[in-house]
Length: 349
View 1: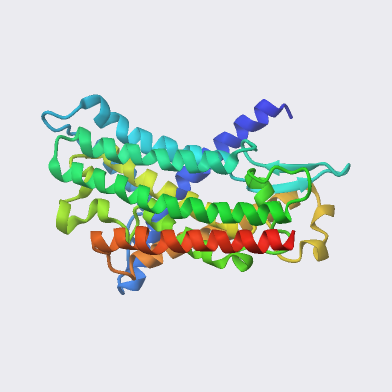
View 2: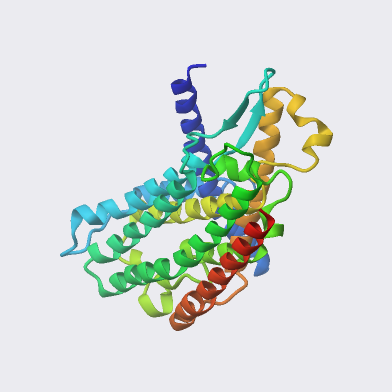
C-alpha cells in the first residue's frame, strides 16, 4: 500500500478509536464511581446504559452556547478547540504494535516514528495548558481566571519532575538499546525493554511519572483548577454546550495519552510476555499486529482504570500541599534518582 494512503488510513482509525474511547472512558468512570458508591450508574439509555455517551453528546450539541458579556470571543472559542486538538496530536508518536516481514524487515505500527518522538509528545501535552489558561482569561471571570492560573502553576511545578524522570528512562534506554538506534524514538524505548521493563530497573521514576501524570491531567487529587468549593467551577465556569463538552473530551484524551505513555515508557508498550518462546515473529503480520495492539491496550486501559479509581478514592489536596509536594518532595527525589541512575549506568558501561 502507498505509504501516504496507509498513514491517512491509520490517522482516521486512531482519531475514531480514541475519540470513541474518550467518550466511553466517561461512561466507565460513571460506572466505576457508581460501583464504589454502591449505585447503579447509567442504565437507562441503551443496554446497560451503553448509549449514554451518545445521549450526552446530543444533549450538549443542542444546548445554547452562551458567551459572557465582555469576553474575548475568539479566544473563548479557541481554548476548547486547542485543548482537544493538542490532545489528539499526542497519539501521533505512540507505537501501537510491530510486525516482522518474511525478509526480516521490522515495521512499527504508528502514525509517525520521529527521532524526537518523546519530545514531541511532551511538547503537545505541555502546550495544552495554554488552552485552559486562555479559557479562564477570555471568560472575563475572576473565578475562571484563577482556575486557569492555577493550572499554569501546577503544570510548571510537576513537569520538572516528570521531565527528570523521563531523562532517567532515556539513560536506561541508551544502555539497553542496540547500537545504532535513536533512543529518543518511542519505538526504540519500547524495543529496549525486551530484556526487562523499566518499571523494575527504575521504579522511583515510575512512581514520580505516575504522580505527575495525575497533576498534568488535572485529575483528583490534583484537580485544583476546578475546585468547586473554591472556584465555583474552575476555568470552564463560563462555558456551555459543546465547548464545555470539548474540555471533557480533552481531559479524557489526556488521561488515555498519559496511560499510554506510562505503559510505553515503563511497561514495554506493545511487548507481551514469552514472545520468543511463542515465536511471535514467525506469525502472520496481522497476528503480530493484533498481539501488540492487544497488550498495548490492556496496559493502557489498566492505567485508565487507576486514574478513575484514584479519583473516587483519594480526597483533593489543598493548594499549598500540592505545591509543597511538587517543589519540595518530587523535584529533589527526581534529581537524586537521576543521579543514582546515571552513576549505576556509567558504572555498568
